[in-house]
Length: 308
Ligand code: RIB
Ligand code: CA
Image 1 (cartoon, helix red, strand yellow):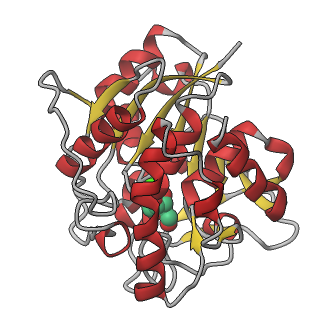
Image 2 (cartoon, protein in one colour):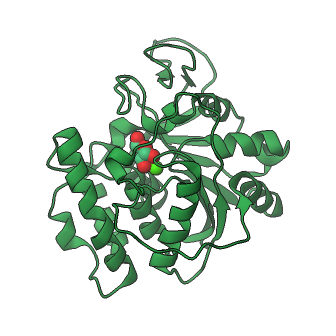
């Protein structure tokens, strides 16, 4: 029985790789792909979700949710990594689907229609899930579980010294989701950034004769350029693909039940994820956190799922 999921994302090149792993995979029934403001502003995130789905042309078309701006006054995008259009400046032309529904509405509608059956995979900021919690008092009891790429266990950020990008985009929403009484799994930056990909990745993508290969051969090269020019790295990290892998190959990860929260005030620490690391504290655990990943097996698994 395929696992029914909603992928909430902010494409973004690594989001697009994760979608490429998910949309053709018979292990998943991707009920919806909902856009969230993050790597790119809301309107662009919505168009990019449409673009990626049109380019990948999956056998089962998911519903699409439209992003709306988050209320975070210090939100900043990540176009410096993903390109001015968020998809490697390839210049895709997308047919704009007129009938749009807000991402949080789609999330609430689909979860309400199938209580306990649908998991939410969050590959961007947690704005939409927080809004779904606020919109529908029964959402939390009806949703399956929430799997999130975000945060940093060791306290080293990527968008600031202390904050990981997805959490930093909307710390208030992240705090609300962290405290929601539902099974949650967090795949933090410490884990996803261990799985690095060299240029040899390009030779291991599917052939350009198929939709996934054609799409990824166009968008992924930009990531190598931006990681080199912006971060001085010769390899890239595909954070969202590793987060999605936790659903497909859970044995490649070691999870630890923890107590976690999100800093929403600190001048230097806003968006930082805080984990109770002191011994002998009996605060209730609210998250399963990935603490170890089998790096080489995870890298091989990404290649396998892209060539499915
Ligand atoms: O910090 C990495 C995360 O932020 C990834 O989800 C990437 O796509 C960006 O959204
Ligand atoms: Ca993302």
